[in-house]
Length: 389
Ligand SMILES: C[S@@+](CC[C@H](N)C(=O)[O-])C[C@H]1O[C@@H](n2cnc3c(N)ncnc32)[C@H](O)[C@@H]1O
Image (cartoon, rainbow, N blue to C red; front, side, top):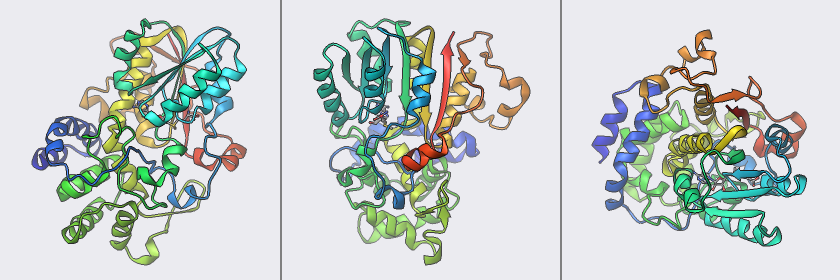
């Protein structure tokens, strides 16, 4: 298993590593189950893109990111049908329900805890909220079972990553600042055989770990960190979040541990990118995001609107390319990061000439300064809005 992983990952340069890792992960999954070390408990993701030192102090729990902008760009009309692909704490959905009369919201989330909140909300708004438990990649089947037809949705929101609720729950293992089992699965309750972060750090070989940290965390010191992880687990398995944070910190001089800065120029723990990488890998987040975008493309009506909020550059790059019409299933396209900035590639037409998306704003939208002050967790968020042609 480990050999297959790093042979696949190693043979591509950095940009290709990214897609190669997805593919390796898909291939690895069934094998992974059999070597499961069993250190997991409960569900969970984790947002490594967020500064862990800041997270514990930050509230409120469900402040929706860029709410004003989302409502503006989705421009939902009375009695329309909206798909909230990432219900989470329900912040965006609640705002939609309270601002648009007679709207119906299909509320998807892979996390059963989020769906139980959606069920509560459904009771309060009889017939207007339809909770759906599942992943982006399962959406097509789930909606077809509900008799929702392609091309029938007016607006789609995808607010990627994990929720404050998930981050704040130490037992889910997302947070660097709270000790908990090293889990990070968003839907571990539904898929108990799915490997958790502890399985990854205790099972994969050094090169495979380094590849994950590079591909999903864009971590410059991936090899050093992977080597420290492998050393540490020889002594005892790494099963706790703060144990992993200490192992990573231990591979740097003490002065470096908080030397990195987040976007608000606050100290960020040196393990932040390691946590991000593991969370993305464990939850297969980039593949899922791609599946979500494809589902939105299929489900939206002509002139239907899409808003996508992302929290790190890997996600935003993927969304940008998708909306531009790049074929993301093709390694070559995905590796053309620099070519993507050439003028001829800025056309919003698919290379085969068909046109799917019209950007509602050419440039990516970022939160206003005051909003970041109020909700620091949204500081690294980026919004892209587009119209389905
Ligand atoms: C950032 S939160 C959404 C917050 C929400 N917009 C709010 O205002 O409360 C992202 C949510 O998306 C869910 N999620 C992430 N990836 C998913 C996927 N592939 N399929 C379904 N839900 C997913 C997570 O479980 C999490 O609850």
